[in-house]
Amino acid sequence: MLLVCCFVLFCFVSAPKKSMAAWFLRYDIYSAIEKVGHTVHDALSYDHAEWVYYHAPGTPEATEKLRWFTIAVCLASIFSDTATILFAILAGQLIFTSLTCFINHYYLFFLLATLMSFYCNCSKDNIRNRAGWIHAIRGQVVVVYAFASLWKFDSDWLSGYIVSQIFLNFEEQGVNRGIPWSRLYASYPQLFLFIAISGVFLDTMLFLVLMFLRPGHKLQRIGLVFHGFTAFTMSQRIGISFPLTMIAAGLAFQRCGEVEKDQEWLGGDVLSHFQWLQLQMQLWFRPNHFKTKQTIQEQGVKKRKLLFPLLFLLAQWLIPLRMPLVSHGEFKHTFEGYRWSWTMMLHEKKSAVAPGLSYMTLRPTCGAFPFPNPQAQEYRHMDAHSFPYELWLYELPRSLAVAQMFPRQMPKFAKVAYEVIGGDQACPAGMTVTTSYFSKYNPIQSYLKWYILFHLSHIIFRRLCLNIASFVHPKRLNK
Image (cartoon, rainbow, N blue to C red; front, side, top):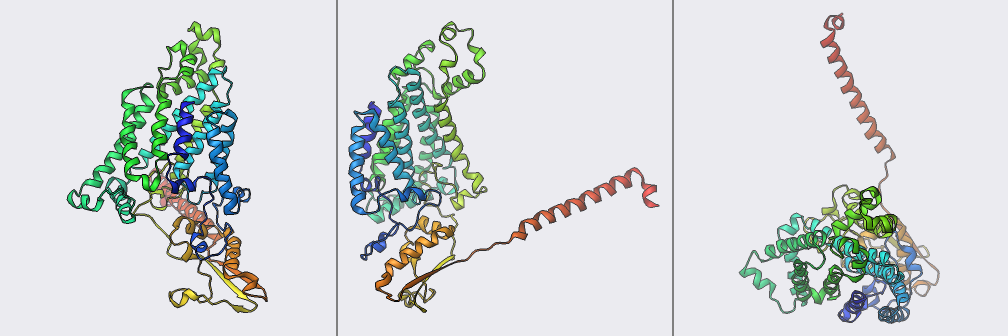
């Protein structure tokens, strides 16, 4: 319960005002349009979670009410186990309505809130399940450190480039807490390289310590150094809710009374997370191994098995591993599959590939006459009659990429163009917005590829057979 209190308080009390406003608010990708006084509906969402938008509040007033309601539920969850379920649902609403601008911090908060709701709503007499969810919380933190360190073995990170871009941009934006990064870099050219290597080292060390050492080990204090540094140097940009939550998560790795009772036959809460996973695998797949232990024989091996915490952890280990597969090994350049994969602080890359062409156009017409594009006079490369939606998204590259990659977004973009221009007030005769999407489809290409491969294989196989035949029966072949 202490971990629950720390988590919810850090999320809402310690977070800066800007990041608090982002909690449980739908990301409005058209903030630039709103500045000129237009009311805009959601015209872009992550392609696989649109249904969440249809059930989320659609006005600023409703969203503000939801935010304060969430804060109340968050505080109530400290005292009410039932409130933790509602808090987890609201945390899910946040992450699934901001998938276009996916943030690992919110994803982690959602997972922790979900795990805590399972833990808090287990019967207090059900020590086994409550201990199992504590192990799941421990395992989730281990997963974060494991993949955060793994993906940092990237040339842009190991060279210090990503770190330099992060902190130098902080200084340009005035969110550097007064640290003169550019001056320090001029005096110590290896500064950002040192920070980058230290980040990989600390992430890896925390993974190894939390995975393989017993609960309460002194080396767990490394997390205070790591997250203390990020809380001070990066809090004006990312807030302090994430660093403090990770520090508070260290409480889960202290010896716990419920785990002590559940593992009393082993001497208490003395197993590392890796040893606990080994124990569960043996209980599931080698139950005869414990028949020699009288204490287990009396209580029953089946009663010691845990299913749902193990399935949860299995999913958390497998989901990030899909990133190299779905990106065909190009994730370092395309970022495909980065969601749910714990790619921490890796988005300031110089080797990323971004499309330079616009694949979608919007052409509004009033009757038979096209609306002129006033931006075309300033930007000569623009179509004189296309709605310049790219200008409102140029600061949001993820949103622009989603718009370009998913043609199903076109009707919603057309609706926004209609409303921004003025709709029927701007065109009493009735406005029409035509969308065009440029793509390439060649159904023969795949067939030709396999046909050529088969044909070449046939030629090679035939030539090999002839060579073997000439070696075995040279005279017969000559005839």
